[in-house]
Image (cartoon, rainbow, N blue to C red; front, side, top):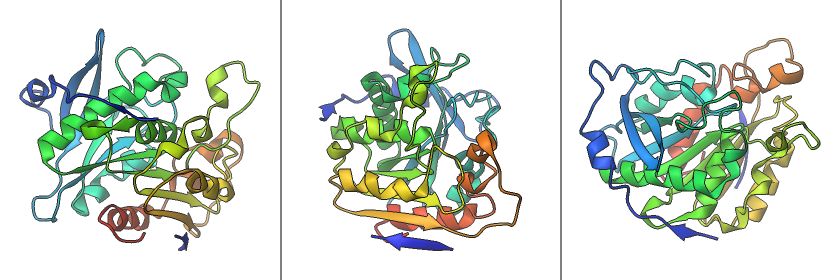
Amino acid sequence: MLHRRMRPFLLPLCLTAAAAWAQPVPGGGVCGEVVTLATREGSSTRMAFMPPAAASGAPVTLLLLPGGHGHIDLDDKGCARKLKGNSLVRSIPLFGAAGLGTALVDAPADWQGEDGLGGYRIAPRHAQDLGQLIAALRTRTQGAVWVVGTSRGAISAVNAASRLSGPAAPDGVVLTSALMAGQAGAKKDWVAHSVFDLPLEDIRMPVLVVGHAGDSCVRSPASEMGRIVARTRSPREQVVTMTGGPAQPAPRGLEACEGRTPHGFVGQEAEVVEGIARFVRGGAF
C-alpha cells in the first residue's frame, strides 16, 4: 500500500569502457556480467551488468547503489558476497522481470576498507567515478541510465544527480529509504552526512523518492522526504510513502536500518519495483 504526492560539470566518455566490455570474466554471468572500469589513476570500479530486455521498449538501465559501507564484494560471477540483504541487491531479478537493465556497483578498489565508501560518498570525485560508469552504460545500451540509491547509497545517487552533466549525467534519480539524518558529533565525521549535504538544487532531472511509514531507522524518517523534492529543480517528481508489509516485531536501534525490515521494504519488493519501473518509463509510481 502506498500514499503519493506528486553546480554541474561535464565528463568525457570513459575511453576504457570498450575494453572493459570486451573482456568478460571467464565462467561469469550468473548474477551479471562483471565489468571493471579504470575510473581514475590508481583505482578501478567493478559492476555486475544485466542488460535491459530487448522487447521492453526504449531501453532503461538502473545503476544500483546499495547502502551501508557500499562494498558488496562482487565475485567473478557478478554475485554480491556482502550486503546480500540490501533491498536493491535482493530486487535485481524483479527489475529484470520488469524489463529493466541493472548495474550493481561495488565500492572502488581503494575504498574497500572497514568504512567502505565512508566520507567519499559526498566527494566530487565520487560523482566523477559514477559518471564514467553511466557514460559507459549509455554507450553499451544506447538507452537511458538512471541512478538508484538506497539508504546511505542515496547520498551517492544525489551526488551524481546534482554534479554531473552531459553524457555522464543520469537521466533521472530514484531514492529509497534515503539517509536524511546524520549523527552529528560522531567519532567519524562522515557519519553525520546525509543527502542534505549535497547541492540538491542542482538536480534538474526526474526525481522519485520512496520511503516506508513503518521505517523506524532514525536515519531515514519518511516524514522528511518532502524536504528533498522541495530543494530540487526537477521537471517531474514524486514522493511515495509505502505502508503495510508483513507483520513482524518492530526492529530497534541499528537493526531498524537493515534491509529485511520496513527500511528495506521487506515483503513489498515487487510493489516497489513495479512502481519504479512505471516512473522511469514516464508514468507515476
